[in-house]
Image 1 (cartoon, rainbow, N blue to C red):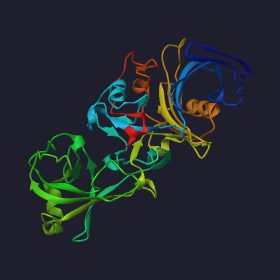
Image 2 (image 1 turned 90 degrees about the horizontal axis):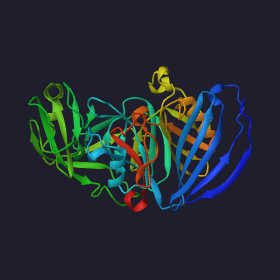
Image 3 (image 1 turned 180 degrees about the horizontal axis):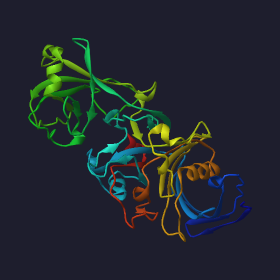
Image 4 (image 1 turned 30 degrees about the horizontal axis):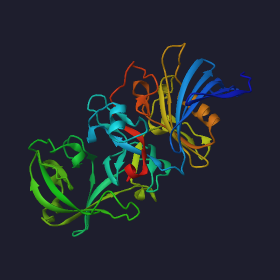
Length: 397
């Protein structure tokens, strides 16, 4: 068991040193931890950076946290690598061009295709689907964080003939019998083969994807042209790419004409349609102030719950938003954390309402004040698919 008490508090230049030793006495070794030292400094008005040196029963761990006060003029915002789906970029590079004062790596991605594994929505436009029932972070128009667990489906609805068709994927290569939707974030064209029919649409609503968020309009388009393959994606619209086998199986597509309206619809939970930003990850670690860790329910293998570098995002009872990274290196420096250890440790440090994981291991990176503050597991930054950035509210809009 660990035993301790608060030690001392003193300032060292701009970094506050807190010597704190807390007693956490639980039956499970995953719940047993102590704080050895704490360094803290302000990085912006209402944004604090805290570095904890902790001890689990297995060994030491360095934990990095950025706290964002809900009363500050800063908010969380997902940003994709190189402004392209299927692209990779260092956390620090994405953060710098986004004007972020702090950032962490975001959701999972496929290391071969570089495509995300999880939901991404930027300014109300869903750029990647989430087929698995996994944790999702939502940021509302005021910059407040929300947490949920769900799978997402999208469809193309044609009001004139009152017909709809499921969209099988977003911003990825089209396969047989599929309908894929391509937004400008995929690239200049769809890069498809000749075995398709591609419907080019121009956006008519919302007229702007920027402001105001509070006035939510449906995602509506007008059909402008039809092509076969490798179609140019309009900057103010999208392309629906139908595989020929799908076209042949749906007779009513013959009734769709140039100039017809198309609406992109989703099964987002109630109220989530109003959130301009969504980012999928997982697993959910804390919900409604209780630890709810159940990786298998989110299609994570139990074997993934092993000690390694970890990244997470959370919210406290008073609305404070937290981004978290735990380092994993040598046994003398930092031994990483399991999801279970992460959940109990962060809930012990803060009065959490929610906490969810993101991609970890070599991806786990925290950027603060113009530099990477942790020690990435691979020895240098890994390029990632997206980040969660702390930005001024003006940049959030």
